[in-house]
Length: 403
Image 1 (cartoon, helix red, strand yellow):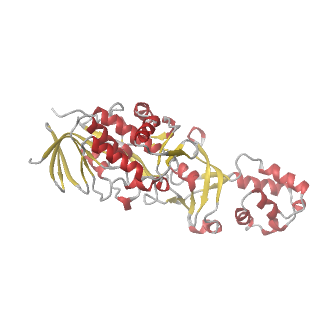
Image 2 (image 1 turned 120 degrees about the horizontal axis):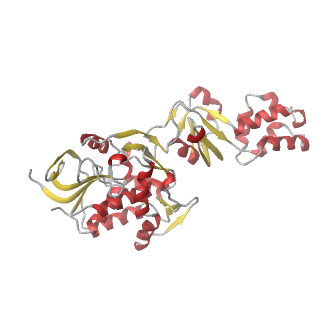
Image 3 (image 1 turned 90 degrees about the vertical axis):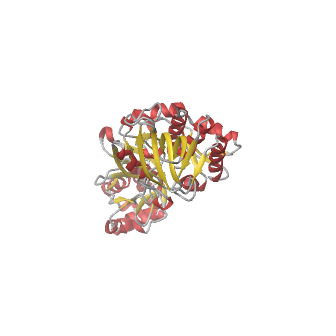
């Protein structure tokens, strides 16, 4: 096969691909970075409302989902949030902490993209973009790739093609297809960090609350499998979103319920009993003091007889049942909003077939998988970017020169 030869080819110029290529290039390797999309790192560009929630200061293995949970420990320990912060500081990029350890750029996501491209330039990384890969073959000499710009040879091949989320910016299943081509198993993929939708008829009473936001406790699962988050909840025309729902969506399974506490950390039943002793207002007016007025009105709409009674006229049993419904609201989502709205893809290349020390395939020497294409999925709040940086650094440091 005629064509150019490199020490390593990295397919995918997103967060993980750029970081890996830069590290390997600065170690003296000849690296080619290929991406089929016209724009570089679009997912970085749109993240965090355009300010890029680039990591979370509190990153720990417990913040990640995987069929093989221990796998992420090594990479996360080898490249920490402090390491990426130091990289930002070398490039004089200002940042701030929002809350819960979430770190954002002061100016915007473009700063991170520019930094990564500069790092690649310092490592003399060649970048072909847009450039699609049509075929990949593996033999004794390494890998041969057929691309839009001709043939390429490399001893090592890094797949950093991401998942299926946000197809409008170029997401594809290339990484999964290539993994299967070389015998790798794929943990079932699904949309994660994604809004949940409900049956339109059952959701009709709450559709008018679209835009309403409040703090809520949300959970799914039972027993040891129960998962709970305390975050902001957002009502939409079709269902629920906001950080609370995005977090729980990664754990939710089709056909199972979620449970909501709309007044977390409070004894709503006791507050209503106290109000009954102290107030002669209507229940609707009192409830509107305890939670957003629009929510109180929607909640009491099916029981106008209760809403119009004054508090002294209310039965303790009815008040207790009202409090229970608000603090133990169980409802069953119809579906997620899919990959179109998902921030990440859960599932991916089975990590039991990869080395946690290098990200190299245990099946094919010289083949590596990093970032979102791997079955490691972080919580909302910068954790997925930290996995991209950490897995990329682990791989970039492990790649060797040809020969």
